[in-house]
Length: 471
Figure 1: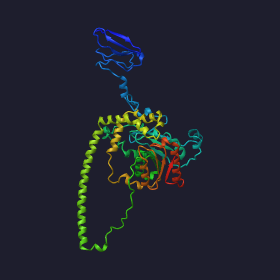
Figure 2 (figure 1 turned 60 degrees about the vertical axis):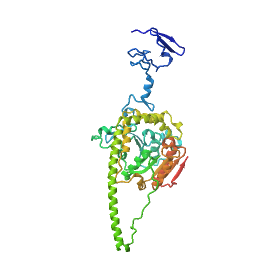
Figure 3 (figure 1 turned 90 degrees about the vertical axis):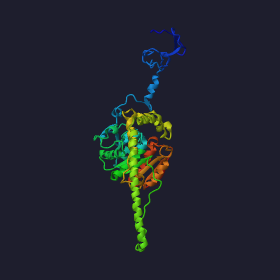
Figure 4 (figure 1 turned 135 degrees about the horizontal axis):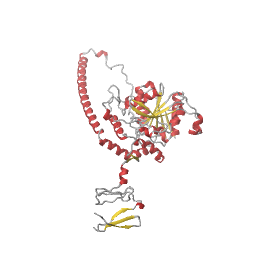
């Protein structure tokens, strides 16, 4: 059937028409020169065709529906990143990117060595170049936080290498940055990856691996936010390999009370009363009650373990579903960029370069599933029955510790850092004013300065107050 339409050109570039045979109401068309490129017309023609003939975005659908191709394109973007053509992480590597294999995972990392003083002048300016290198002979390993990557250390890596006179290395933990992604739900029975790459244990072992990678006996660990947790766990795994800890905006829940030493030399009983019949009867009753109590506790513990196991299985089944992946994508799309801006005290400093750096990993294949698996590994991790919780072991840390926080941190409040400094013996706390959750990005000069003071104090014999406020 042939349809005849009358076209009338409007001043705004829109053409309207009607069927001269059926006298149907006027229909709106988009003229190619009008700029209305994403509006299409519903029609009864049983096939789809392009109004402009050039694929400009105006198309008829075979179902006779109005199709907004621009909206479809927007749906494929998350945090401003096109999700149509995801790439292998190595295809997104920077010129100074490096990769190495550990436990079946290709770990992305960057390594900086101290440069000559002449090159320092051009990199940092005259003031920084005049700062003498400490020549510690101790490399630094930088551990990023949740949602971050090696990119977050870009502003300080060369500065720290120049300051310490040693190598500085930062690597992307699995699920973040450009480190390879693995689907542990599909390969959990395989021997190819013996350890869950998204677990805390893997991050700890990877940290210790890089100390060997740098051919060092010891290293200084610098952890930011959740990376601080990895640094502390690495210390407890191998304290003899950790020379010092620098915890930046540490996402470690500090205990409310500091553990106290309890005197257990005596049991408080009077030896003169032990021979009395009343005392013997009391002792028998005490043992009986203790035995019954322990039996009840053991029974309750088995019930809790069973329920906990069922809970973990149920949680894993949910996290393995497509719903969890969809939820993660929705959260990143809605709050990803906003979270980056919230992390800064002055969000106006967050430019396109910073946003691109944080969202670049969203261009890698499998980023969403990896993030789900990382979350699953964190939620269902089992606490060791032979070790007390981390909060009860903080007082056992004996190496030099620096804690750096911003006074306006909206993600991990500075009061938690202050409480943490009281829980770790002889630790030093530095509070940087007008700073948010990212001191090493937002206040680079101040951050390097407090690190320098700490290293001089720890390895150069200088005495400093334990609490500083840096402007």
